[in-house]
Amino acid sequence: MAQGGVRLRSAFLVSSIGDWIYRFAAPTLILQITGSALSAALAYVLEFIPYIVVGLVAGVIADRWDRRRILITCDCLSFAIALVIAAVAAADRPSVALLYLCAFLLAAVRPFAFPAFQGFIVDTVPQERLSRMNAWTQTVDSSLGFVGPVVGTAFIAALGVPLATLVNALTFAISALLIYQIAHVPSREKPVAGVRAELSGVAGDFVAGLRILRSIRPVWWGTLLMAAANFAGFVVEGNLVYLILQVAGLPAVVLGAVFAAQGLGAVLGAVVAPRLIDRHPTGRLLTYGMALSALAMAVPAALPAVGVIAAAWAVEGVATSVIVVSWFTARQTVVPADAIGRVASVSRAAAYATIPVGALAGGAVVGGALAAWGGPVRTLFLCAAVVQTAVAAATALSPLRDIHEAVPAPTTPGDP
Image (tube, rainbow, N blue to C red; front, side, top):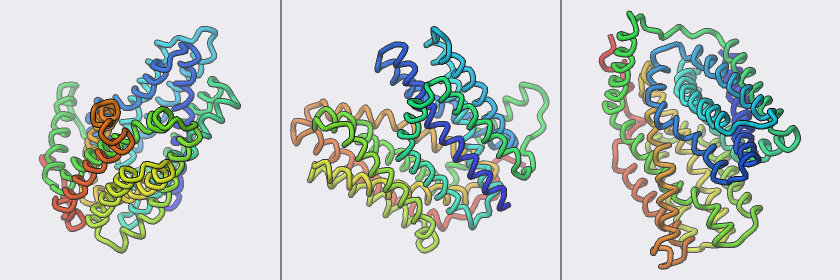
């Protein structure tokens, strides 16, 4: 079990590093070919669409079939697609259309890996260790959010896009090998007869997953409130580039410092989260985390200096990590193991759906009449703080507050 945990963590770390290399390699290559910032930005947009569209079905697959096999298959497919991208990048006349296709296919694989990974954690990690495993993955995510841009751009600058993409492909291969070496978890495959029965079974599993999501009221409310919190956060985060570089007229290094502060705060929050979970009820931590996030958004509305924004965004990073680790751990505890994939993918789809909406709403605020009332920086942070304050109040009053007292559901409704 201990070796399995090390291999699972190593696989997550290696593949996450590869993701950051790719995240900069594909847009950089498209920008080199087209010279269009909009064309390069489209490569980023493609990363979110599959989570919203494919993610719901992916959760059913993660619960219906062997999660270890799904993770290995996802890594192998990602390896193959990344090899194609490397070959296209090395061509004399790279095809932009083929790059977009490969970018979309690679993005479409990840939603299958996410719920399978969440379920595989439940399958392989003892319940008393769940908070620490979630804290570790959040620490990796936060740390890479801090150093990822440096690592990704450094690889591209040192190796060039084709070789950097090849390194990305190798990270998927290493991840697949590490997961393959983890002790086998009994298969979750359910015998079915024919394609029609297969599709019917998937549809039935999806409906059953939604039922259990609704039946555990703290998890249902948590899904809605996490999506709302994402909306509030990206009202600001989706427009920080414009605020700092265009409105304030500051150099890009200042923008990097703000995001670095957020990353460092997130790492700190992930480190302390397991200790807080051991000592305090999870529902209370979620309420306090939401309130701390609201405070972090409100302070720059009163004092819109860059130093204050950086400090506030560091606090926002702490609050976000405490919320995420507490939420993941509680969800894994009260949701049946055979439904965790569906619940996780629905939550992720809801969260990702509010990201572009929040960013666009923030852009409308900055460019609209409201911005003239108190300045774009003050107005943007104030709007986000109002939404997040409502989320914190709803958390304190909703069943999410008592998620630590929820009784784990024994099985998925409708399952034998």
